[in-house]
Amino acid sequence: MNIYAKNTDTSNELVISRYRNGIKLIKPDFHGENSSFGTVKSILQMLSNVFFINKANIIEASNESTANFNKYDSVNEFIGKGYHDFPDVSKDTIIKAMHNNKKVIATNNPMVIVEECSFLDSPRLELMTIKLPWYNENDHIAGIFGFSFQLDKNQIAVSCDKMINLFLSNIFLPFFNPPQNKKHDIHFTSREHDCLRLIVKGKTAKEIGIILGVSFRTIECYLENIKNKMKVKTKSQLIEKAIDYLGN
Image (cartoon, rainbow, N blue to C red; front, side):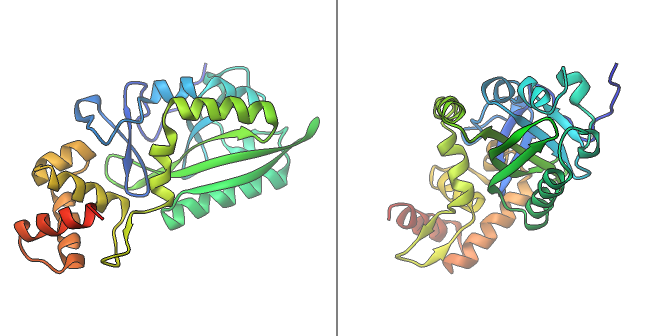
């Protein structure tokens, strides 16, 4: 029986919410309009080869397809394993995967990667993998959240169909294409853009914090950064410029 103690809560009922340049798991009570990725359970069921890996490269959560792909009979056996526990995977594959994980964590940025996976007893495979920083409840990076699919015709067709059903283009594209406004030449992070959108809707900083799953003080910091970028001092000036910004 696997008695591995997880570093971070990955319970099935938690909601996967967009946070900074990655994701954060929040309680359903705080599920807001911008946190519509689904629960941990729904994502693990809908997508193939999903994984949560902590900073020590230990599997914290996954699904059956990922466990089976890595030669484990069940998720329960797979949880708590590290890359050193994959004896059938080539050393080169493990080194490259760990390097990519380290890069995502070091830069706090997502990656779309083509990773080669070599098993000792089977042909080399190519995987398209999306990796995102995964933040814990203290707003520190806990590790990596990601999923991958094989780059062959049948697997791509199945994976794309699942992604479309989950509207993942709306989930992941903002991470790789932060909103910009050419007219004003102002760059906002995806999180600042969320604050702009919600402040225009009349939400208070406290309400925005609940919707985005972050603290009131964090939202105040975002709003202060936005004011500085827009060169305004008051909330009314901010809203006026935000309406103009979002309308262009």
